[in-house]
Length: 225
Image (tube, rainbow, N blue to C red):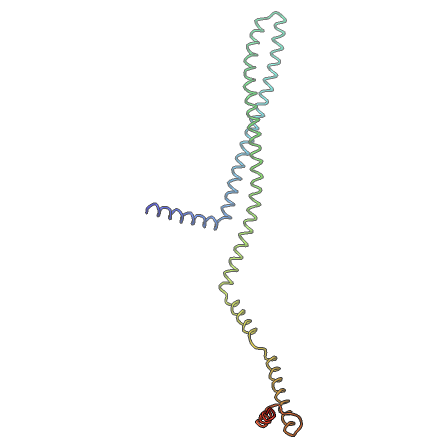
């Protein structure tokens, strides 16, 4: 039972959270865009710092290379002048400088690799933020349209004018046409008038009557014998 209640509470909490997210979706989108822009700004600062370190390290390498070349030339000249003591001292300094140069070149290579990766990440994040802002504009327009449609639906549902108008139209359409009814009455009257005239002429011996009489029926029966 406890597990069932826990599941129901979790489900209700999820539904409330979803409803809250739907209600404040535009605000949440704007906040997420601001957070993404803050992350992008931080990444740009990190990139700038790496580039600054890379440039400084490049200058250090170039300076060290120049010193190494100069010291090598001087050591060579000392050997040529049979000053092996000076050449030996120079050789020790050259070895130390070469080891330092190796470390600085490795550091410079790592910095260049890191800069390339971070620059790609910054460019990707920049494009995504542009897409997010365009999507936010579309979402804001859709939200506005939904709100307008919702208010219209609520107004239509609460307003009985539509139903009353439809009922009145149906009643008017279902009523008999008075003009047609008048025409039918006129035809009936005209027909009655014409029959009366024909019967009147028949009673005077002109033509047959439009209605049968008892004498007509007896005459017809006698004629069949």
